[in-house]
Length: 510
Image (tube, rainbow, N blue to C red; front, side, top):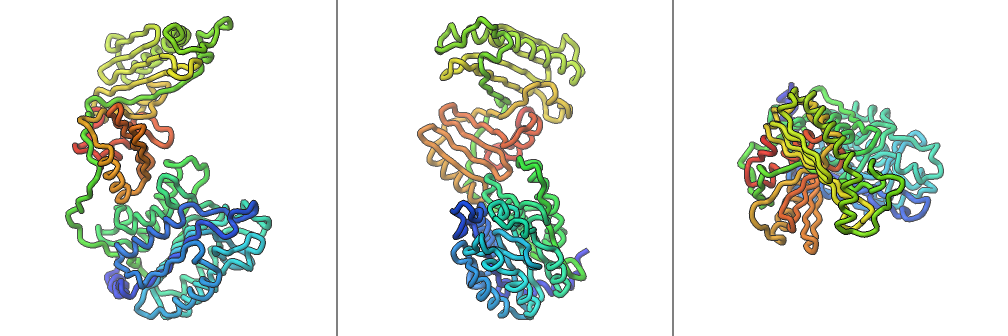
């Protein structure tokens, strides 16, 4: 339960009295040498987007924000200018600190690195958080402060000779500090002993991306009573969302559990969201899609010699021609028949159908299974560039509503589908579509590439889906950045296409 008096007091620190220091070090002075310090991927993007958040969402003026990127974040700046900034804070001001870079624990102190930190003298060329930030804050009049640190020592240790004396940031030092402040929170990207991961898809540190999205007010799970973002609502959201993203959207085998230290008698307010208004019209890429012709597809290119029908006396084709194509279809014929039989048996078992309800066909080079729920096809042909390979195309067309499919529907198919293909209605202007996707990239994140010569636009969403527009075939292709079974792919595709389709997304019988 939020205490109204706490919110009232916190709101006294308005945007004009809120001050922030943002530090990000992506490339270090000594990062190019073999024993240098590893770069921190996307740290600059993290910092600039965090500043944009403070400007646009918190209404903090530029003159109240100090941002140091790479060369600006020297040891001298952190030891002298940061201390001076904190010293100027008053009782009715609020202070926000953000850091993206390497951090570690050494000689009884939590340390953060500077641009000019030297790998051969980490202790002497880094700065103590206690000296440059915590003690100055504790001795200042400021009673409202937020510290955000996206850092770990793991990547630092990988190229540092004295790795045995370096460990992750200590909890004890932060714990002692928060108890001295009236309203104070320290939010860190990971717990001791863990890595803080970046994401090529998000082009951010994963924790920072979730932090920014939450503070923007874009995440319902971080909002209390449709209006407030509090210390605990933010803490709880990050503690769930970041590990979930690591598990579901990346290939990392370890976890990343955000760590938070907060001290106040009640939940304290970080941000009160403005009243909801009509959404701002953004020039997004709207596409007319033929959902009734959509299909799921998987294309593989096995070696001809891998076919079960390839015998010891056979020769691997060296040319692409009709004779070689016929040979390839022949040696793969038994594999096609086995797969069709397997799909047939699974269909009976999982969908509870009888033989009369399922139609199967198999001939050299192709096979199919058809029932009231779906149509499944396999086609074999020779690769058009590599004569020693086959091109195996599997297509799945679902004929019923998504809700009509059982949870184990995916188990029917031995090879999981890797993409969804949807024809596009009408012609598209390449330049106009690129411009609109660029607008979309600015609004929603993700990353965009375009190649007019090949007639391709590829946009990877912030959730990891790759949306490809093929102008030559006039089709849109959606594929995930990791293995997904077909039902999960359908669900993720619906979410990803909702923002770019002119119509309500009714994918595969939805």
